[in-house]
Length: 387
Image (cartoon, rainbow, N blue to C red; front, side, top):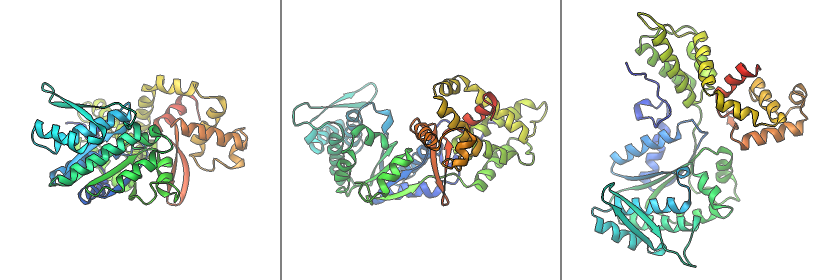
């Protein structure tokens, strides 16, 4: 039978674990033409949430345009895609699409061409001293999209994944320019999803930032352990794999309950159990989970080795301290002394690791701790650099 644990792609509705509330929030945002910030670390399933919500809203009659901001080298290319999609999907013929582009987006002077083989539109913008570029261009395009949506007879939603890329690309004025545009829009529901949790949290919670109270804010956190355990148990039992005591908890512990890594490790365990049995699958045990995790981590050995050797000595010490202390008490003098790093140097090293997206800060239930972005890196460290 097919392995029930999927990773590395957008999951469908039946494959998501305990994300119903988040999906409903995105759908409601589209249908109500409101605004939502969806904030969560990488590998927590935001893209799959947007995927499932898009399908659900589309079935409800909405037009949903979804963009991963990181997939566009420039903001001009992102703006061009929005123009093409808005005009072509809100109209029924090529002629009407062309008219929509020149009418609703006249301020940015788009020139459109249609590829009859691929059935796709491409758009370029005029050049001139008064032609906006970057975020101002994107803001003008969103204004045009709202004008077009106002003529539509159905809800329209624009969903931005990795939205922080737009802000970082646009510079210091980007937040204000985007807010000035979208706060006036009444016909489009916007979802701004992103994985830079510190940046997005600051943008939406600080009263002096333009995005403060622009829309609802929803954080994508860990999947509740009990629900994830039940999901894993059903998958293994469906494959005829007996589950030893503590095996499911070991999967969740080793992967630190990060949804992507849980699915990755469960997938590998499922395959191993099915392959190791002769007539029936081998049982899933804590020992087998640890063995599979080591194999999975060592498959990434070239990547992890390159990353580890690129770090200065102080950052290596701080990283090992984080793993050993499970990310807690990292600013204390006791921890710094144990690992022979001055407190100030420890904090500097941890900030550097965070900027390199090796480490992230997690806030949960009134507590703050540092975690590795990739839990399997900790498994690799335990094998190659015993901790």
